[in-house]
Image (cartoon, rainbow, N blue to C red; front, side):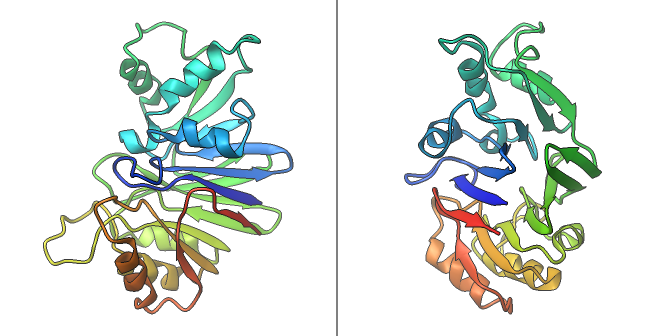
Length: 249
């Protein structure tokens, strides 16, 4: 399995990164986990723009889904004719949400390009991957994703506050892409995001091999987020996500 960070900024794109998007590849199959604002531009640096076989959207906040609207343009109006229709897995009403975001009438235009499929808790087979999903602790319907292939395991938290379900989902993962959107301070709103310390605590409880901190808000100091995670008690390697970083396992 090969994972490339396409975008890792939280809530909105930062000066060095688009919003959330991660490319997962195995056996010639390419899948995007989220496609937040700015992701389509960054994707072209690392992968063929039209060489995507499936997309999974964890939830319908713009920083995780909005570039699906411009990716529709890329696949529909490319010079050689429309690219093949691909599946897009997402929460309820993903198709309607994306169609409205582009101000399209309710017609087949976007659904002719994307085969929208419902994301629900439990396992699903996507290409060579077995993906297991679980609801996360976030103000909207949001999923964490566990991706398995050939004995390798990746878990991506999406957006979440403290979650025992995330610990169960990530159990024994080789690579854990875990959000750390909040700086550690006493006045944090509940049930929204994790801090670096909390990401490390979730990783330690899950017994993961490697922790990569994601959803890094531009106004936070990433070095402090990393220090919090390293001081959390997690005993494995931990690092900050960076655009273009590649993990093979």
